[in-house]
Image 1: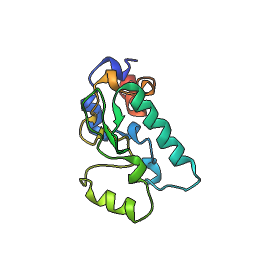
Image 2 (image 1 turned 30 degrees about the vertical axis):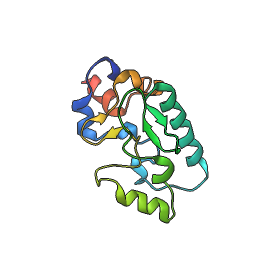
Image 3 (image 1 turned 90 degrees about the horizontal axis):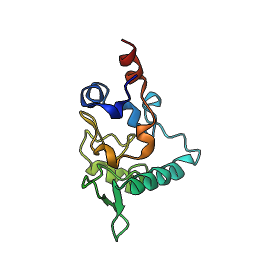
Length: 137
């Protein structure tokens, strides 16, 4: 099997819209957060992964900003997953096409906006089932 990092994935990612990038809330569960307390820690884990990769940096005011890759995040999951008025107001400011269930660098038409070298290492270690299905053809 050819790993997705070994060739251009824009066509396949465009077909599914980046299901493998549904990091924060599962697509097959309709993005419902069960509230068991795992999500804030998981967001912190992914934030650290993206900072370590050079994709993300934290601005002096604590907001997320483009890192060395120069690609601004589409949303801040620390805010977009809040279940209060602050979260609701923040989500209302986002373009309709931004899916907050997914990584803050996932575009629904092209998949990951980050150049490969700035993606979190785990992104190069995992392949979605559509890749596996395509490679078996």
